[in-house]
Amino acid sequence: MTYQAYYARALQETAQTAAATVQLQAQDLLSAVDKFEHLPYLVGAERTLSELLKSPRDAALVAQANRYLAFAKDRTEVAAIYLIAADGTTLAASNWQTETSYVGNNYRFRPYFQEAIAGRTAMFYGIGVTTGTPGAFIAAPLRVRGQTRGVVAVKIDLTPFETRWREGGLRIAMADALGVIFLTTQPDWRYRSLQALPQPAVEALRSTRQYGDAALHTLTGRQHALPIAELQALEIGTKTYLLKAHAIGRYGWQMLLFSDPAEPRRKGMAAAQIAGLSLALVYLSLALVWQYRRRQAERLASQRALAQVAAELDQRIAARTAELTAANDIAVQTGKLAVLGQMAASISHEISQPLTALRTLADNAASFLARNDAATARHNLHIIGELCVRMGSIVGELKAFARKEPVRLQTVSVQQAIAGALMLVEPSRKATGTRIQVDGADLLVQGDPIRLEQVLVNLLRNGMDAMEAQPERTLELLVRADGPWVEITVRDHGSGLSDDVLRHLFEPFFTTKPSGKGLGLGLSLSQAIVHEMGGSIQAANARPGASFTLALPLAPEHHATHPDERTAR
Ligand code: ADP
Image (cartoon, rainbow, N blue to C red; front, top):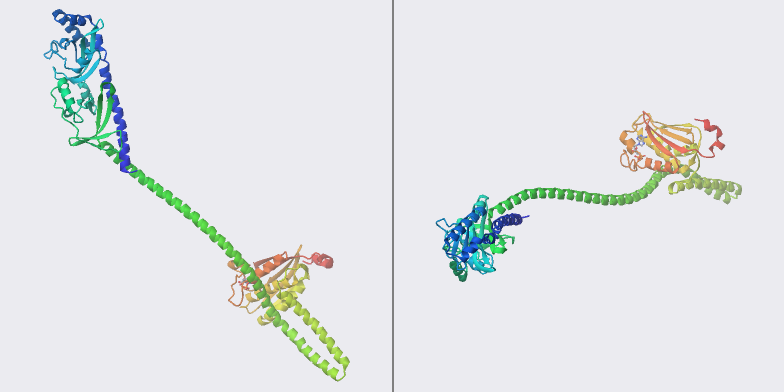
């Protein structure tokens, strides 16, 4: 809220206070007047007064009436009570003994007399033409047998109100129907009009002498617009006041309450300042709330972003996984190719010999036929055939290894798998001068022979790699039965496994080996294969070295075929 708004609100408060104040004061004033409304009638009921009206020159009656009116005045605490004859002449008055006695004075020109003699109760405020003191005049007709014969008037001094208001710190003015201030806490405003009076009004006032000889200057300067309708800003002289008017309809009067415009301004300012402070606090709170919300929003946004990133990541991971799977496949292929490479290296020797023999046998067979030695030629062809079968089986094995085929679970001889693996690692074993000790019974497991070979090859090669820097290189292969499981342990005497390596060992692409030496796929592929076969793989430190243990399910027919090996462990 702006200062203006606070000012308007303060004005509103001022207006409300003013309204309440002016209403209370007007009520007070009215009741002070109203309580004497019937006094002229009551006073007029006294026979002496009506008697006097009948015999105005009766001095005894005048004296009696004067005493009576003085008594009544004292009892009622009004300013004066007096009896006016139908011609306007005051016959008797409570102040008969004073220098300013009304007795003998004619008040025919006074409106209250005119109204009262016309039969109505009248109310009039004016300056006493005799006393020069202002007062409210209440006049009532005095009827004798239904006929208005005179007027009883009561004058009420309202000036004590001025004192009361002043003492109450109020700035009040009573204005009559014409707008002339007749009662006020501000002496210099008295008998001055709020607006310029029209000439007939000025003349009427002169004739009734309502305000005596007062100049009846116009008081007001200018009016100013205010943000609220309930108050008016009135510039009087050099000062501006806030004016709250309250109409006292019955007498056509207006009570005007003037208040200091600085008050609501100060209040408005203070409120604005307080509000400014509160506003600052509010702003601060708002800022904090906003900041909080923004942070929330940011948090939400970042959460969303994170979620999006996570989703993207998921997608990427999915894509990457797909890639990896593909890569794995490729890796598997690569691994297999590597193994095939080893295999090729190791078997090329095996194949090249029969091939050379085949070439020789084939060449010789042709020579023997040319020499008509059909028997020798037939023998050579038989050997050729056998060599082809043998080579065909090698090719078949290579094909199975090279091609990505689903795991076909079958009964696998662990020793045959170990033999196959050893055959595959033979070139490396020779190159590194590694001794491989195989121990344990020939157990049957359920699995895939080619895959099991692949796992064993991986473990053996890792073991050999781990012992690369050592002069003595020994690998131990231990097979044993453990309940429904067959445990194959490959143990080396190498560097062992650090905690970090132990944590990441089976993760794809985790490798501590220099590039070209390892892809970090061996153990992850091995684990995947072992899992596919329904088994597990564990790594541990053997101090010295590391040990990898495969647990594979014992083949169902194992017990039938090798019942004695159940207790082999
Ligand atoms: P790669 O052999 O291509 O590195 P692997 O998955 O087979 O991939 O092995 C991952 C890592 O595990 C190796 O780089 C090595 O750090 C560690 N590791 C595997 N086997 C052994 C072992 N027998 N001794 C010490 N560390 C090993």
